[in-house]
Length: 295
Image (tube, rainbow, N blue to C red; front, side, top):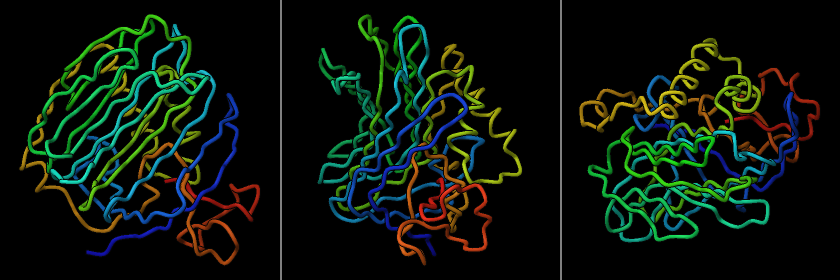
């Protein structure tokens, strides 16, 4: 099977949306990722996954944005993943921080010795629940309501609720993937601080440098999924072998991967970043010396 490989290097990209300036950081020196068509991806969104392999490999990426969440708003974080139980710590999770870099909560999946979904509260013990068939696709969703009520969903099933009465704001979110010695395959990742404005924000920030024929359809799917979870009108979706077997598994265009962080490609004719297809139109880039493309 042919995979599209990339080398990821540290860089900082600043760019402005119509609403605010955002800073995205990529925090590792060098990591190889591959991309392929897969089952570990959100229903109705592009079936493209990133695969982190190699022994004791790690990627950690950080979104810094003032008031990603503040009291009276809503926050929704979503990703899908699958792996196998490993003897070396293997996890995929995100962590939310306040403006003083204090951890507020984290949530994700662990494939170390047993397959678990977990939620860490900064002021209480960790919540854990077993998940079966880790080799099948599983989804994690955290929905924070306007009043601080927070819910953890695993495969669209509500498994935990708590309330953050003291959160003034969330100002950064870190996304971490830690692979033991096999591989972790993860699908579309969505972070949104206001579902009512989700469509505009996702097109501005997630689909930069893309020309998707069905952008409107993708927008609607993302918006409907967020509204469903925030309104608790969810349906549990148990992973099954049938779903996994009927998904293509060939190579895939990384640009179709929904990932709210920007990753640069090494090996350009210029020092820095480049597009895989040198014939692509680069008119969207204001600075050709720092061309990066959006996964």
